[in-house]
Every structure is written in structure tokens, then in C-alpha cells.
Length: 389
Image 1 (tube, rainbow, N blue to C red):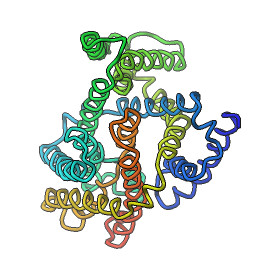
Image 2: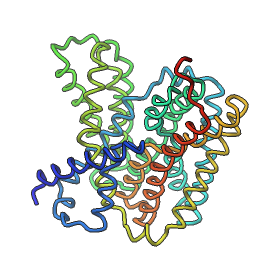
Image 3: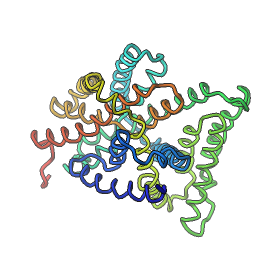
Image 4: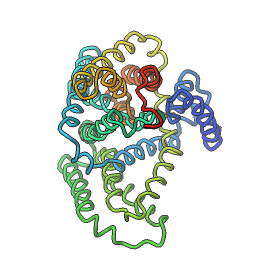
């Protein structure tokens, strides 16, 4: 089947499934992941989904997601975060990461470093998923809502550290027959240096006058592929994509920032991300999900209890019992960062298909249960402020 017709069908199906997911407060962007799971059980389009063109588009989707993460980093807000938020975020993230890494190490016999990086990526928080729910119940500007969003902002630091560490690990493990260790280190230093210089001179670059926003977007795409390409020379394309996002936000003229941000989100989530998530679902082995349901459930329950307990203990005095409990539920929502990282590790053969499938299965449970559970308790306990307030 032609890949163009295949993609047409996938986007239509994503739209239809996405509408149903949104009704239960699950982000529509995970619809292609479910479609991919279905195709992993029975795939009549193997020739298309295994083609170089499809894989290239899926990889671009992964890199654009990392680019978006870098673009949406808010360093100023991170620096302004209170000690309470920084301390709470650190305790919540690290407590889950430590417990989960112990489980991964002893259950799957993974090395400590891979176990910890996987766990750290899973411990990060998807505040973007929670925002629509907070808006719906008018909680965004309350102390409860601001605590969730502030923790989500500080948690971005852990995301960046994890992505950098994983990328360096992948580059080291992959090696290169054409590029020696010395050259690899030189290229990595060049990537960091170029990123630093662009950020340092961002105010000067912002002074460049563009006839329209389309030209600004072209410049952004130049830096995206430039840094991506430099990183790719040493197997650090993911790091290049992340840095490109950070750089792009700094060099865009302020008057064009909102428009370019919107264009990047449309390009990423409207085109590339669905193909990436479809690819993620295709690589899941359904047999492993059927074979290890208790293991998936165990991993889900343990990681939830650890994070929920830590967040409850840290915020109870500030928010009260009910809101601290709800905060624990909220912080268990995962972001696409963790899916990107486990996909990277699978592609570089650092984790097995069994581990990959189990972790994706765990992700899916959280994606469905947390938004529904959170909405239920907010309504039951009447947490939302009254309209006249």
C-alpha cells in the first residue's frame, strides 16, 4: 500500500479515536499509540511501516518532540521557584526514580545507570496534560493549581538532565567506525559551544529584521537541522534537537514568538508526533502485555504509591489532606519525554522488547486512569472554587 494513502488513513483514524479519548479527558495525541498497539497485534501494512520513509518520518517526530521540550523550557520561572517547590519536586522525582530503578535493576537485570535513567524519565510530570483539567474546574490560579504547575516547571530540569545523560550514553554505547573517541568528544564540545554562543548572542540575533514570520520559521528550521545534524554525527541527535529548541526560543524576535510557537506546535503535534506515537505502538509486543499483566500492575501501583506518598508528605501542611492527596494523583501523569527515552533505548538495543512493552503498558494505564480519577475526586470533594469566587 502507498505510504501516502496509509498516512491518510492513520490521520483520519487518529482524529476519530482522538475525539473519543478527549471525552474521557485523555489527550488525543495518544490515539495513534493505541492504533499502533492494534497494528502490532495484526499489521497488514508491514511493508509500509517498515519502510525507510516511514521510519524517517517517525524519527523526525521524536526529534520534533524533543525540540518542543527545549522550546517550552522556561528558565526564568525555574529560577524564581520557591524553596518549597524546589524541595518538593526534588523529593517527589528522586523518591520514585530510586524505587523504580531498584525494581528495574533486580527484576529485569538492567544496569544501574540505565535503570536509573529510565526511572528518572518516568518520574517526570506531564503538567501539560493536567492543564485542561485545571482550567475546566477553574483551579489554574488557585494555590493547588499553581503548586502543580510550578512543580511541573521545576521538573523540567530533571527532564533536560535525563535527556542529556541518555544521549551521551547512547553516543558512547553506539560508538562509530568512522569517528574516533577524540573526534566524538570534539564534536560534542562543539555542540555545547555553539548552543552557548547562540544563547549568549541571542539579543543581537533578535535584532535581525524579517519581512514576515515565514522567514523566521525558515531560520528556526535551519538551526533545528543544523544542531540535529551535528549531534547525529556522534549519535547525539536527541541532544541536538533539545538544544535547537532552547536556542530557537532565545533568538526569535519577541513580536514573532507567539506565532512561531503556535506554528511549531501545529507542525509537531499535528503531523510528526502522531507518526512517532504510531511507531511506538507498533514496536510493542502484545504477547508481553498478555504474559506479564501482574508485573505491569505491580510497577504501576508501586511507582504511584511512592510518588503519591512523597508528594502528600511534602505538601500536606501547605494544602491540607484532600488537596495533598489530589496533588499526589496529579503528579503521576507522565509526559511524552519518557516514551521518547524508552524508544531511544530500544532502538539502540539497550533494553529488550519485553521491558519496552511493559513500560509502555504502564504508561498507558497512567494516561487513562489519572485524568479520570483526578476529575472524579475534584468533583466529589468540591475542590473547584465557586463561580462567584
